[in-house]
Amino acid sequence: MDLVLLLGGIVLLLCLCLLKKYRRSNFTALLLPPGPPRLPLVGNLHQLDKKAPFKTFVELSKRYGPVLTVHLGWQRAVVLVGFDTVKEALVDQADDFTGRGPVPFLLRATKGYGLAISNGERWRQLRRFTLMTLRDFGMGRKGMEEWIQEESKHLAARFNTTKATPFDPSYFLSCSVSNVICCLVFGQRFAYDDQHFLHLLQILSETIRFGSSPRGQLYNVFPRLMEWLPGKHHKTFAWIEELRAFITEKIEEHRNTLSTGCPRDYIDSFLIRLRQEKQKDSTEFHYDNLVSTVLNLYLAGTETTSSTIRFALSVLVKYPKVQESIQQEVDGVIGRRSPTMEDRKSLPFTDAVLHEVQRLMDLVPMGVPRYALRDIPFRGYVIPKDTMIVPLLHSVLKEEKQWATPWTFNPQHFLDHNGNFKKNPAFLPFSAGKRACVGESLARMEIFLFVVSLLQNFVFSHAGGPDGVDLSPEYSSFANVPRRYDIVATPRS
Image 1 (cartoon, helix red, strand yellow):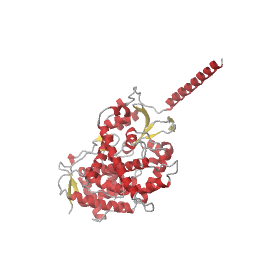
Image 2 (cartoon, rainbow, N blue to C red):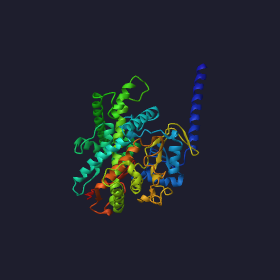
Image 3 (cartoon, rainbow, N blue to C red):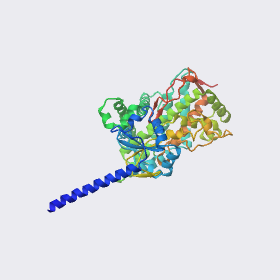
Image 4 (cartoon, rainbow, N blue to C red):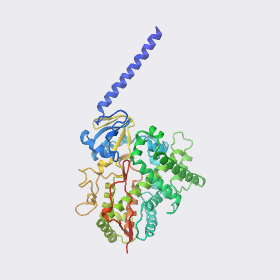
């Protein structure tokens, strides 16, 4: 009798739990943002533009509103569309939207460690330390400005070696930009003809290209299945292991020559903190986080900024009158001396062009996905825990009510009627809120100083003329990867 009562109690308890779960799931479903019907297994993947999925999200928002639910395979995702919606989430409700999702490609590359995909106390410790340390070593300050000025001279010298014949500027630009982040992280720069350095830069470039390809996005949706299938993803992860090996080698070199009273760079500072906290159980300053955070900084600090500068050169080739106007403004304000960030205030047209380049490029159209670490109330809906959140930066940078001509290059977006530079709150290429890009100030500085320095020294053109340049991206998914062109750099007299 006691056994029957016990079993009956267990069955009743299970039924109550299942009923509670059922009611909660139904209740949550009622409060979910609306979205299109889904198919089993694939969700809404069949509806997406495979070459530019973010364009499908914009179209769906016209029917379902600026907060909508889609299913990417098994993964539920809530997409935020438009400036007002994205700002309300990332800025006004910043604490609710700090979560970072377990993006399979990034998870595999970082082994689950580092700043980019961390949450909670790991994210807080690593972000605070990284921002403080990079600032200590000059990020956004005069010391960093001098590094970039010096690197600009190396870049101009390399461009001069082409003797006004067509060349692909991609690796020269990558070398220069990478050397800036290398000085911060590794405490050294590399020669432009260092073959190992060039090989690593090629890996960085190919990694971004793969991550923005349809196959790269497919890996994020069906990672377990893709692991069993042949394809370029295996080669990409092998390349990433080469990057990790390079970083590990540099860390060991630093460890063997470390002076705790005189840190030389980010790695030294992290190793010192690691020694100080090695007895703390709750510390996030350990070897795995160091390797993956350096990988985050090296990858993000090289390819994104160099791609932006490369796109800027393509824009200036496409619009030679804009290039000429910048050169006239620069010549009149600073002549041929090295540009400084202080000069930007006196170069409103140049500043407007560089902002418009970033807006038009729309580098990371879907942003880096956020993640609901708990149920999030938002605009009368509930975004359930474990939901991916896509802040659609594309919809902000190309929103018609924010920009007069969102689909065309127009520096007037950032100029008032008197020709003075004007800000636009919808300019969010680096995202917004507490998980905005940690290297934003460095990237802004590099884009301005490198481009102005190049325009002081060269006139850029293309053998096929302006019409031979297509500003549409080569790949368009996680990132908009600009097309490569052989350009001509003619020295200015």
